[in-house]
Length: 602
Image (cartoon, rainbow, N blue to C red; front, side, top):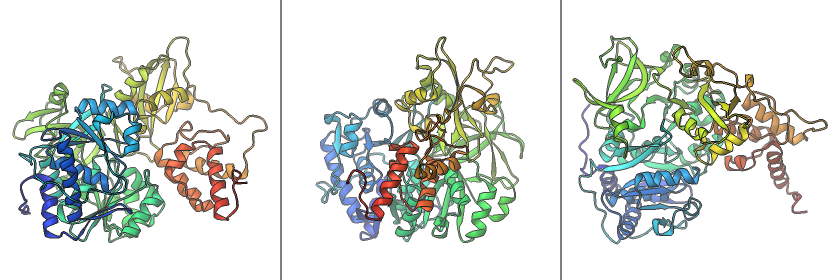
């Protein structure tokens, strides 16, 4: 397939080109603010001029700390127009994590929402607050493209690091351009609307934002801070979304519940973990017009490396992750870096122009993960085990190392273990995934306490929550006298993955005598129990302490909406994490719906 002739200058040039072709076409909308392509270019250009006045130029690192919104898209484009590169930051990350990322990236300035900048402790001299009530309307200078635009750095995306230090993956404009304009990938056109609902720190956001803007389509921003399943479905329906990406875990949950979201979409990309053939088959039979695409790829190779269009016939067995696209190259090699025979299992190595230059400030780690492969050039060692079918499509067979994926998040257990060892009551620790690949997969910590101590899961969870993102905090905990070892003296992670935490010191507290739940508390507890897979019998039970996580919370919120007619947001859910607190929220919502005063109003 012939590649299109593209204007030089990377992604910013593609957006400017589209603004020239269709200035009045919808570019970005978040429900509150809508920008045409002409308005997007004008706003980004004006902000770029302000950034330049603050000393930002070619090679400058700029943090982005804003809620998912139209202004976030404008800010990222503006940074690129100065010649700088963006460092996406998650508003939910603990302050120390954000500070470490900014320091590691050498960010000169952080652009974002005023309240989030303050919460993160960004000094005023290093912060630029975006106007929440509007965007710049006029450019003081014409937009310009960075020197050597295609090969300039566009993003630094941080992923989990096995040594306790996050890895800053460098992504170039050329890499993003090749991703979003690949003729052998998902084809988008000016009539499409793509849902942007991933956190900006998740590399899927690169596809969600820049794939539509590169071709004259529209970005539709899901405005909820933590969108529930119902939020996503409503956004797809009301904005007429035609294409979206979902993590595999979320897709499985939506498929199990026969979500109406599939009835609106034309194209759906799914990736992050092994795709269930049962769930894929169920969706394709119910919605035969849906273009379901199984995608695979690490951040080091710019979001997606391979893809496979799933047909119902694929669902009789494991669904392949497909073939490389967009200039990516792959090799399946053995431990001596030699090609394995067709059909044999080996480690997947990835090459091509979309490969990262390396990890920011970590030349040793870069040298460890990248090497020259004879006849293939520079390649990245993915750590994933695959085999090739006769037609070249790849099947995924798990990991060759300890790295894991849970709900689409890439997790180095070593990073979690490093943070836990900093707790004074911990002697040894091992973090594994129990029920890997299943819908109830759980990141689980097995802890050996320091002599004379008996740390609780609640205390250790709080310790990690102050230091790590939520997806790196285990949902299962057990205290053991010693960690099991293999014959070579290494921690037996396979044995731990097969160990029920209940075999350790994790017995949940039982209800005290006379401690009964109110009817509303019983409804909440029942919804929790369906998601958690075990009874919940205390009013003061904490969702996270019970082993819950964000995906489970989505289904509790969904059940409460269906059972009681009450819409809770995920933000409300996590700020009211006990059965009793959520029952109070439900009661207030029910009274308000019937026009009755709450206890506080009486």
